[in-house]
Length: 81
Figure (cartoon, rainbow, N blue to C red):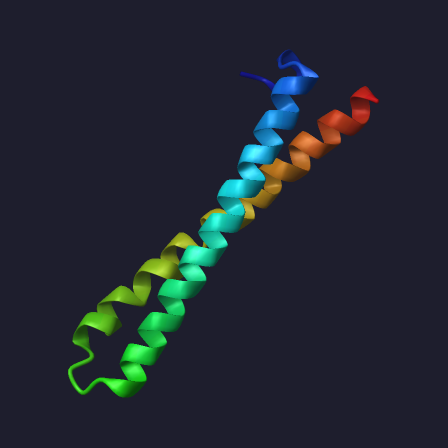
């Protein structure tokens, strides 16, 4: 569905949801990255942490996409006011 076809209330709700999801994603990926780095430093058998550190690095590519979506929604909301 196009942004122009949605109501202002729908756009505001979607913006709020994307903000919450992005914040949670940043928090969880940061925590996972810190745990992996800590595990790499402190554990002798760190093969698990070597494999797991790829996950936050790969999933962090979603964050710029979410910021781009938020920017588009904000632009559409500003054009309506």
